[in-house]
Image 1: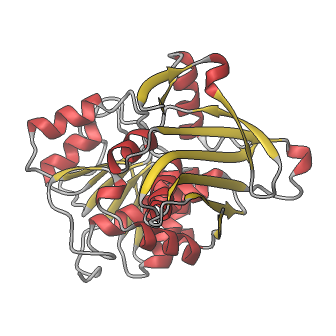
Image 2: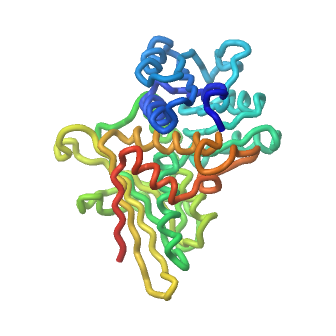
Image 3: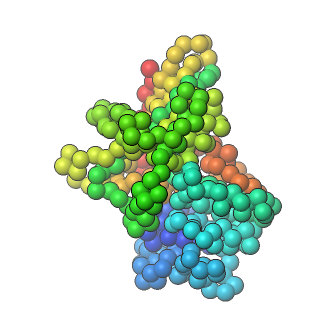
Length: 337
């Protein structure tokens, strides 16, 4: 597919912490791809568009409005929603236009409206549910490890961020929404789904430098994706905070993915990825969003995706995703025991 003839990819929330980084990642991967940076603040959107360069424009958008606040007649090749779409206006727009839609900010308990819109109009547009750890990076890395095993027993994902790394306003709103509704975290434990609270919602794991961290389980989409894709009986996602005083200069994000099971010869194995990025967690999330966007549009990894309801692992080759993360600048280390 030639990107020059395409309508722009609409990044709603494109001037935010994740959105601006996603735009930069897309521009790096596809220099000719038209991108529209959309947000409530026109001046900020214009500044990001100028910084991203290439065929990048800026527009105002508001997911609270039925028409998203967009100019009448504006056409887009995809709608990437990097903020919470509380009124489902973004997915309605994508379905009306018949273009791919990415829903980035839904916890595992919040996907009902998105699923209902797909059920009501299953042939209108491809919808990618991407409320996964770091834009699907963890799920795809876990599945890449699982390819080396005959069977998978357990998958544990840990994300370590700086204690003061709360992301931008959209990320802060996600955390606050989770706290306000008092969500427990959905985990798979010994083959049974359970809502983890209290002590059951904490887990100790070693970060990329071998330092033990105390993580707290989050209600992210990885658990259901990985349960459907593997025969694992235990799956969970935890986030831990790193003391700012110990990090040195700048931000850093560690993604730890551990998969245990049986090799093809029957021996026990524990495989691990440490994926590290020298930035806030917004950048690894943005990489995930960029990888998903290019796949939906058929720019990398296969033809354009047809109508349907998808998780990242149903569209994106895990090995290609890990390679893309490295290409974008993340440090990837694999260990096994």
